[in-house]
Image 1 (cartoon, rainbow, N blue to C red):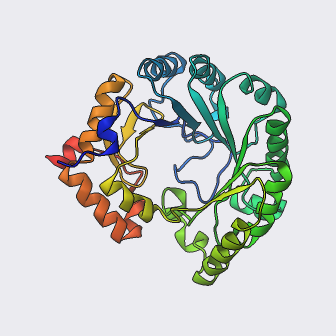
Image 2: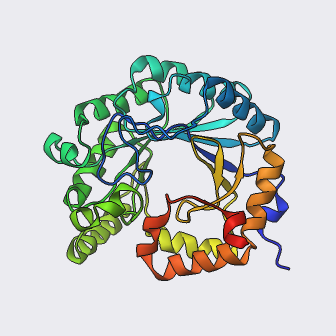
Length: 319
C-alpha cells in the first residue's frame, strides 16, 4: 500500500473551519450557498465552538483558516480566534471585509496571523455590487487598509465571473496599491450559488483566454505581490488529491467534516468526535472505493461539482 503524506502525519496541517453559512452579502458566485439568514441548522454555539477550538489545540493542529459564510457575523468569532491564537495556532481569516474595522484588525494583530484574505471582485462599485449584492467596495478597500495599518499580512482574492473577469488587471493593480503580498484566483468554481446561476456567471472561453494572458503577464512583473492561480481549476486540484490527498480537514458550521470541497461526502463530526478519530476517518475515506470513484467522476465532469453541498454520509455511500 502506497504511503501518502497524510499517513505520516498525526494531525492535519490545516483545518478550514466554516464558522457559519450566514453572511451579510448575497454573492452570485458563493461556493457555500451563504447569504443573509442562511445559517445552517445546528451550527455550533459559542461553547461548542470554543470546545472544538480546544480539540484542535490539543491535537496540535498548526494552522486554521476561519471562514464562512462571513465569519465576522458570528458573535463568538473573536473569542474563537483568540483561543486558537493564544495557543500558538497560526490563523488565516477569510472575509468580505464589510465588517473588518480597525478595531477588529488591532485585536487580531495580537495573534499569530498568517494572513487576512479579503475579496475584491471588481474595481468599481457598479461591478462589485452586481457580483456582491449588498456589498460596498469602499468598505472592502477600507478593510484592506485597516489590515495593513495594523501590520497584518494581506491577501486579495478575486472570483472571475462573466461580470468581473474583465476587471482582473485593475484588481491586481489595486492589490499592489493596497499592500497585499498575494493575489489568489483561478477558474470560477461550479459549486453552490455559482452552480445554480451558472448560465449567468460562467465566463466565456474568450474571456478566460484573456484572463490567463493577463495573469501570466502580471506574474512576470517584479515586486512583492505573488500571483497564485495554480491549480487553475478545481478538477486539477482534485486530480492531484487522488494520488496525494491534502493534509486538510474542511469543517462545516455544525462540526461535520467533509472529505473534499468538491465532493458531498461527510466522513466525521468534530462536534462529538476527538480530532484523532476525525483525522483517521478522513485518511480512511481517501482509500474508500466510493470516494475514489466519485473523485474520478468529478475530475472528468465539472458539472458534478454542483452536488458538492448536497451532503451525505460516507457510511451510507459505502454501504
